Image (cartoon, rainbow, N blue to C red):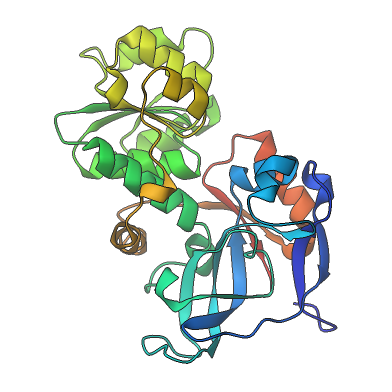
Length: 309
């Protein structure tokens, strides 16, 4: 944090990563039922820059100038009235859309979770959207040990968690990824296949007995592959191309269907080393534009995070 004043990321116009800027922040106070968090790290998600690029999506969260980000982790530094289960100094993580990328934020005490021993600040800061999305999808489609599952973008944030949660349920998992990430996925027990021309044939070779469930984080290519493979519509879930998915009767479960207890359990699984969740790179808050340019370029193994100290 700057010695001169607390800072936050904001954008005053819509556009790409170039619209993000670091400005002085007026430190908020915690009201009844709230806590104030000294944010230590904030995770990046593709939806962040999609909101910033769209006037319509930005308007859903208020007027410009707007803050940025959702996922955060930090230390409680003020507790409002009626908060009894958290104290100053506790390490917590959660999500607060348009407020996460700042030195301070306030959040409802009921909407944050404690960071368990073994889970790093940076990992916790990347869990709210990806973790809630992955746990909700796997639970809602009812993955079991009898299933063979296709997970697209399997080395990315949501895909990597989804693939490993399916493996923990005993499923066979085929994951699409760039060649550079095939060894990484293989080490996790995931059968890697390259996306692009010929992907359906490669999926059939990897899963000769067929695919039962598809989780799409990449978009049209995966959904068209699911159709070609003959996967029943209610066994396909997409978070990447919801209009196409709804047109074809696919599920679009995501973060809003999440259960907080699922996220708590996932945090414990990562802390215990049963789920791998790498942070690919950390950037100081003032390099926010560079961080989003890297995210938009794709092929990130795991997550990117902004840090405030």
